[in-house]
Structures are given as structure tokens and as C-alpha cells.
Image (cartoon, rainbow, N blue to C red; front, top):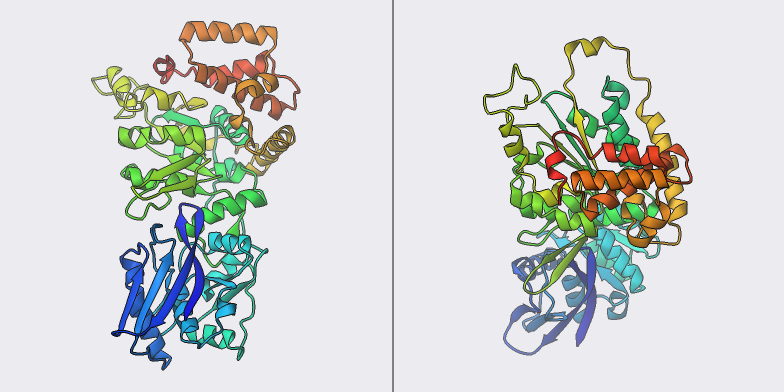
Amino acid sequence: MIARAFTVAFEGVDPRSVEVQCAVSPGLPAFAIVGLADKAVSEARERVRTALAAMSIALPSRRITVNLSPADLPKEGSHFDLAIALALLAALEIIPADEVEQTLAIGELSLDGRLVPVAGALPAAVAAAEQDRSLLCPKACGAEAAWVGATQVLAATTLAEVVRHFSGQSPITPAEAGEVAGGPATAVDLAQVNGQERAKRALEISAAGRHHLLMIGAPGSGKSLLARCMPGILPPMTPAEALETSMVHSLAGKLGDGGISRTRPFSDPHHTASPASIVGGGRRAGPGEVSIAHNGVLFLDELPEFPPRVLDTLRQPLETGEIMVPRAEARYRYPCRFLLIAAANPCRCGHLADASKACSRAPSCGDEYLGRISGPLMDRFDLRIEVPPVDWVDGSLPAATEDSATVAARVAEARAIQGRRYAGLPQIRVNADADGPLLEQIASPDAEGRALLGRVAERFGLSARAYHRILRVARTIADLDGAQDVRHPHLAEAVSYRLTASTRPKLAG
């Protein structure tokens, strides 16, 4: 008899259906797993054998063959354990084979039969819904998977509980979705930032249109503090965005207690991070920080300290909104539509603007230090601002008049305007996504504004990308003002965010 169970293999965020076939046939006693399985999957035979022994189920003295189909699809991870155990139990006629075939199973087995939580329960539940099957998973994964309401999620604690469910002795109660997590506990309120009004304005524009922002300033000027205010002014994720982001976090094992948050993620990797940890890859081609920050914020502090090779890997994801991790046997796709915020000192010593503190190599040290950031990457920052140093007397100034909630309300209104504008265009959500004829249509400047852009382009040699990014920022500024058309003041402000003294040499090209 050949019994079948079903599970999934993950190619990035795309789950691929895997049929687990089990045959118990005459021959010398053996337990073989075939179908391009990695080491963790091959070791499943010992975990399954021992877990069954813990339930007083002895394997027959026959040849047991488990095939993972399609055989040319790489199988990685320990989540195949439960499906292999189900197929074997069905082949031994301990549980009904027809009911097993109506279930998609993921889970790792411990030696005493307990089900250990695994990553990827949420995308597995999506795959189960598409196949019109129920999902069987460990108890700890049930609240996460139950967010996909289109399928029934059965969350079990032990393999014995699974056997009793399929034999009709004690059915498993379907799992319920976890709680929706609250706002970011670590977000900084803008009311805590004294001064820096231009930087706050740039932060608001960046949040409203998802425009990438670069802040350059002396140490202690508040660049990191400003960046950590961003989660507090961004609008909550839509249900579709929350599901997209949570699927990535599920694969990365970052969903705690089964709760799905509508707060946009904030990722801030250290500058010693490797290319694989930033864009994805590694031994199992997992998601990187750019995908963890999908629909949220990626903050790169001390930007020039990142290796140039790491920084240049960001150029394509910033344009396409997804990352492809190629391998010899497959290509893994992860979404990565994020808002990039970066902070940098003007030079290595950080005091280029202060003649009394600057090193003897000024001003050439500034060009050399910021020169670590390539021109093409620098060109992808829509907003570039200088953050002036804060004197100790600024601490005695009156508190900021606007808090994060006030700014967040304006950002939400601007996002709502963009939502209505792009309602029929599913691939475009904010102004930063607009391009080509659509951008010219929604951000066509008036005569005075067009003359301004012509003078700026001629004077500073703006690239076509820089020209389009200025139009996008101007459109967002107009949305914040509630204006129907993009006018000269909107364009003038947008241009001002690209002509800082520290980044002016990078505008060419």
C-alpha cells in the first residue's frame, strides 16, 4: 500500500506543494527517504522512528520507502517530520489514509513525540487554503497560521494527539488567530526632539510618500533619534500589507506568540553585517534585513562604515521592491519594498563643519569619507539633509510644539490621497512608486516650476533618475498641502532637499 500526505517546501515566500509518498514493502528492514532531501530531512527517519517507539508503535520488519515528490525540488528543514510520520502511519493503516490526504502538515518531531514549532506556518496556511486542505501544525504555530481564515488550522501538542484526532477518539479543536500587537514600544516621539525643524519636515515628507532619506551631520546632532521617530508617524499597515510582512517574518521565525502586528517594522542592522544578512541568502537562502523591513523602515546608521559591496547590493532592491536569491537548483524570491533611512557623519572625525575641531585633512577628508557611498546609491536618496549640531543651550528651549500623533495625522491624510489616486493600480501604493507617463501626469509642474527644474538640471547635471525623484517628492509635498497641482513652491522645496553642501558633488550623473 502507498499512502500519501502533503506538506510544502519554501522557495522564498512562495510555498511549493510537496507530496509525501510512503510505501511499506517486503524486503530487508530499512527506512529510506528519497527526493532531494537535505541533512535535516534525511535525519527525520530517526526522529520519526523514535517518536513512534515512544508511543509503543513498532515499525514492521519490512522495507519502508518515503519519496518526497517532486523529486527534483530541493527539500530543506525539519518541518517535513510530521508529514512523513502521517504518511507512514497511514501506510501502516493506523490512521485513515483518505483523511490524511485532506490535510497539509508541517512540524518537527522531538524524540518523545512532542511537536516542535517551525518557521513558515503562515505561508503554509496560505498554501493549504489554495489547495482546499486543512493545516496541521504544532500548537505554538496555531495562532499564527489561523490568521488565514480561509482554511481550518489544527494545532496539536504531540503526535499521539494527532493519532487520536484522525482515529476519531479526540478531535482537535481548531486554532484561533493570535492577538493584534499594539504600537511600537520603542518609538521615539517627535516631541522629545528640540529644534531640527528642517529634519522633522524631511521626516514627514519621507513618511508621506515613502521617500528614501539621508541625514548627514556631526556626532550627537540627533540623526539616530530622528530616525527612531519614524515608526511613530507612519500609518498602520493595511491588512494586505500586514499579511505580506508577516509571511516574511514567519519564515524568519520572528512572529511572537502568533500575533500579527499592523505596526510597520523597523530594522537597524549593524555596519558589520554581511551581504547575505542584508539582502538575504546564506546556507538556506533565508530572508535578509531588507525583507524583514518590507513595508517598513530600514535604518542604516553610520552609512559610510558599511562595506561598499554591501551598500551596492541595495541598489536593485530599492528599484524593484523584491530580491531574488539565486541558487544552482532554485531561485528564492522575497519582497523588500521598504523605506531607507540612512545617517552619516560628514567625515571620519565628524567635525568637518567646525574648524576648531576638524582634523588637519579637512576638507578633503569629507569627500573621501562620503565617497565610500557610490554615486548610483546616493542618487537613489530622494531627500538629503544636513543635520546641524545641537548646542547644550538648546536643551533649555521650549518643548517641540508638535508631537508624533499630530504629524502622523497629516501623513495619514497624504497617504489617503495617494490611496485614492492609485486605487486602480495595485502595483503602485505611494508616490515613490509612480514612474513614466503616470508620474508626468500626476506631477506635471507649472511653467514657473518647469523653468526652475531646467535651471537646476543644467547647473548641477541632474540625472534622469534625480529629475523623476524630485517630481515624486514635489507631488508628496503638494499632497501634504492638500494641493491639486504641483506648483513652483513644491518643486523649490523638493529641489532644496537634493542640494546640500555635503552631497552636491554626488549629484552629477
